[in-house]
Length: 147
Image 1: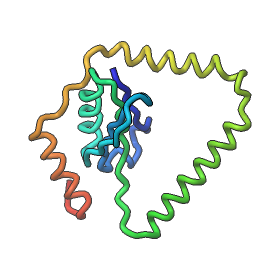
Image 2: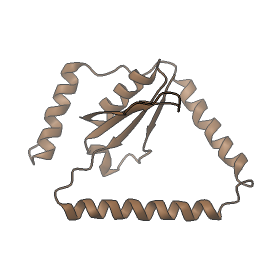
Image 3: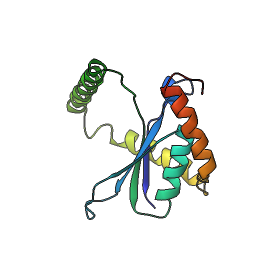
């Protein structure tokens, strides 16, 4: 079984309505090959497709929103925000007692794994017709039409 990584977003997040992409890559360091990027998809379709692919394969799938930028300045803003977030994360990591918080982290990870184990059947991947309908809705959103 592979791994699926995605953002944990609140139900009212505006990012849920964005197009999503899936990046498939090797799960471990043994295999070395270029990741494969697929999409854009609607989020439920991306999650179902990613889950179907990694269910029986030693692959990692990263499902993330596609942020359509309309200017270089907008891209620079996203890059700056990502850099600041990485610096903040590095500062938090440096300030953490590496040994004091271990049990809390393990407990949270075990709870998350137990939640995944409760659902034994992976989501059914969307059909080609469902995906194509999703592409139409995404195109409408990106071009200002109704979706």
